[in-house]
Length: 275
Image (cartoon, rainbow, N blue to C red; front, side):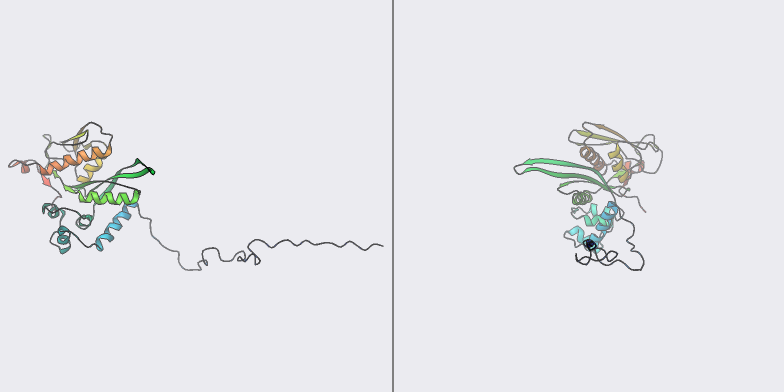
């Protein structure tokens, strides 16, 4: 009689991640450190928008700012407390921190970002041109344009350039149909030109609104103008040329010489309204 057959048992390899592989057992601590045990959840607060992040960075920069110009030292010393005093001193505005301190509620807007390419011996180089506007909605507006390799640092540099180019405009009621004492428009007709783009701004009565394109509405709203007639000629699709031409037109409102009694007749106001 033959002996019964011997049953062979096969040994399967240990699962991956077991003790032989040197990994932790299933259900143990995960990668990245031990798990949190108890305690309230982390409260990081609401996420800030890019504009809020730039405003927060500007306030932090103003706290640790050390002025290098005469105008900046006067602002830190308290000799100059308003943006009107800073612009009428005749000193150049070279530091954007001056505007951050004197106008903490300044509004910012990015109106154009486009890519600029240039061929060189090493290949094609790509840069970004950024156009921005700043304003307080009460007689102050600025325009800046900067090009750089990265978008986010270039936006910040363009904002700083717009703050350095800040101007005060003269508002009034220059329309013959206007009978209000509130300076809702411009006191007279002005025109500006950049390249082939020409922009003419004419006073309008209350209720007309801002009769212009999107770029013009942003600039006029930041300058504090409520009603305007706008006429343009040339290549108006170029955003920077159109914005620059309108900026030069608004700049002429403050540089134009006035006749005696004209300021009271048209309710003119230079810069911000008195508190």
